Image: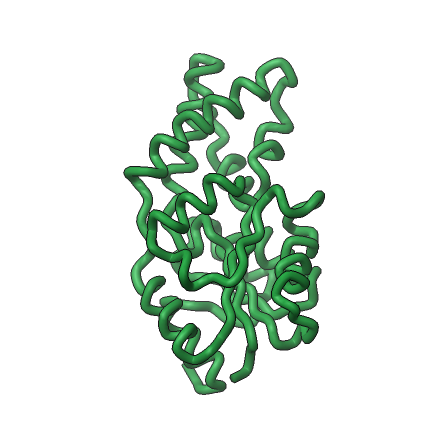
Length: 217
């Protein structure tokens, strides 16, 4: 095997949560300010960062209200409107059968991340789940990946692969000194991800066994 462990982002990588996140953003702005946020490109660019960072540019008097309204809608939608992407369950199962260790590294809150992973039936695949609460600094800092590696007892950076859908994920991997794979089903601008030079592009998560087995895609 080329890698001993594969770590994954969650939102937009394993689960199709980006539309729900964007809907939750707009719900929050309409509820708090009375109108939607016109700069949707900015909101999209913050996915993968802690939620508090998304609201940091806005007036301090409304940040907490925006945060609370976002969580209100997002928590409701997470139970009914989120599914895994095609081939995710098959890809995770294939890697487990090969003996590859797997984990999640996300900026999502722990309660939302664990609830979503459990509801989608993915929990048995993961040895560890690193969330926003587990580190003081977050993507693109390397600390979330380094924390996952410490918890899993992994020391060889060349034997770890991080899979993500955003520039924050790819920069986190680069800063940690591990290889990265970008997913072709990303909602993010592909040219921005390409500029980060991920080692691999995945069309389906079931591409991973070929990569790990050192075969050609």
